[in-house]
Length: 437
Ligand code: UGY
Ligand code: MN
Image 1 (cartoon, rainbow, N blue to C red):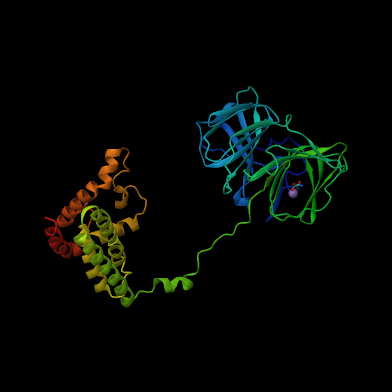
Image 2: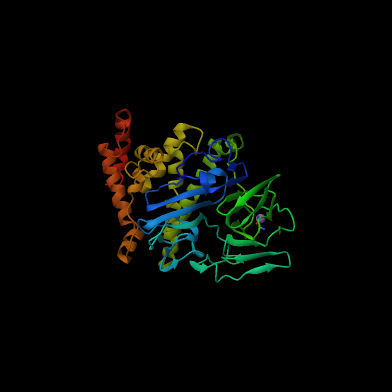
């Protein structure tokens, strides 16, 4: 929270300050930042500086944890995280690895790891906290947790430019989809060009001061200032002041350009929704021929050949679910009655009742994934042992559930069936029920 003001009111409080947020870059000095409190952090808060809401592809903030503060329980959010301690001490655990980090210490928590954070010290702990979804690279193992310190990270001088770098998480490491680098500048030095690149940056000034070019404007940055640079923002840093400067820099790297795939417009999809009796009947003809053919094979096959013949017939018969399901959605044929007749017959060998299934399946579409209302979520649990597996393979539960459905259908219960169609529904169930009694 900004510090309380005592008179006289200092510059920047009312009209003028250096904070600036544009479409693809931002400058955020610390004085205007507000803490965010979340239920899974106690005695701790995050001063967010960049998030996807701003246009960034990552989240960056300053974590502040009071003594004893941190995560309430081990957390698993599927994101990868980077923490760099600025002040105080922070204990970081990622799966079964952990470290106690003082200022300059850092941790990488891979996506999917369970992590926890805690300030074990007596003073406030402050840390840079970066989070983002991990982008895997085909054929390359995802990184494991890493811990380190700025002190132990080699300093690489860039030719005789007066600049230096520390690659905290390595450089050109293809397992990583971002780098965290400390970029250092001797007094009066700058990059050899104005950069414009696809990678974006989160920049936190660690030491000194300088002028930062963002697009066409220069902004003065001091220790503690944050800047976000979106892709392709023209950028240059010129170290001013009477000493050197250094900043901690997030950079997304090592991954190809992605394209946001957009769903085709309905007008280009319409032809896919076209229904035709002729084409539906042709496909039905093929299915019937396959049924007859595989049925004939079962009749003729002898000895061991019966096994593949029965499997084949089973596959073709199980595939009757396709016309059963499509007719129920009225998509197999243009003619509604044809859909009903073919669907009704296609369901019979599996003891499915077409009208009953219509209610059941439409309830599933109306309440998809609602555990209380989606009837298709009530399917039997996945078998956990060999006996359960065998039972599932032999279809014991399947046929029991078919019988149960038939009974419920005959009684007109579960799922709730509108009274208007109940009579028609029962009538159609009766012969269906007889066929298995
Ligand atoms: O590596 C970089 O992209 C770096 N030179 N950019 C920057 O510091 N703004
Ligand atoms: Mn750059």
